[in-house]
Amino acid sequence: MSEHPFAARVAARLCFVVSAVAAAALLAACGSRQPAPPEPPPATATPRNSVVMPAIAYGTTAKGLQLTKADDACDVPASLRQAVQDQLLDPYEFVLTPPAPAAAQAAPLLKLEITDLLANAGGLYGGPKIVQLRGTLERQGQAPARFTAQRQMFIYFGIPRSTCSMVGVVTYKLGEDIAQWLVKPVDGAVLGER
Image 1: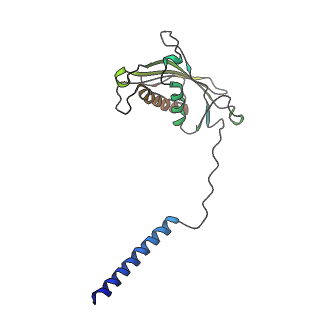
Image 2 (image 1 turned 30 degrees about the vertical axis):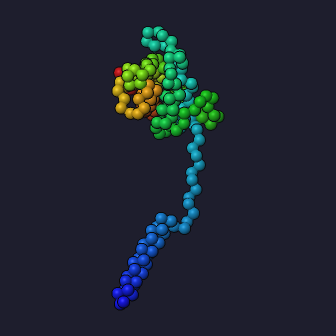
C-alpha cells in the first residue's frame, strides 16, 4: 500500500511537467500580444513593373504557310501568355492586356507571333512537339528589340503523356526564356534551343 501514494506523486509530477511544457509551447506559438503589423497594399501596375502583351498572333512559317487556330489544338497563345506571367522577373510583375490602365500607359509593349507549331496528336507517340516564336519589345524612346525563340520536346516522362501536356511543357520553358530576356532585352537574340 505504501507504493501507491508514491506512484500517485510521480504521476502528478509528470503530469505537471507535461502541462508546463505544453503551456510554454503554446505561449511561444502565440508570440507577443502586440497586434499584427498591417499588410502592405497590393502592388499596382505601373510602366516600370508591367508589360503590355496584345493577343499572341499566328504568323507564317519559314516556308510561307499561314498558321491558324485550326493548326493549334492545344491553345498555345493562352498557355504561353500564362507561362510569361508566371515567370516574370524583377522589376516586372504584371502582364497587361491592351488597353493598359492609365497608370501604366507607358509600359513596354511585347508582341509575340507563333511562326511554327508542330503538335501531332498521339502524345508521346505522336513525335516531337515544337513551338517557334518571333517577338518584338517596343519601349518609348528606344528602338524595338526583337528575338526569335524555339523549344521542342521529344521524350516526356511525366503524366499525363498527352500532346497538350507536352506542348504545355514547351510553352512553359519559352515563357521562362522570354521572362529572362525582358530583364535585359538584346536585339536579335535567339532564345531557347537552336
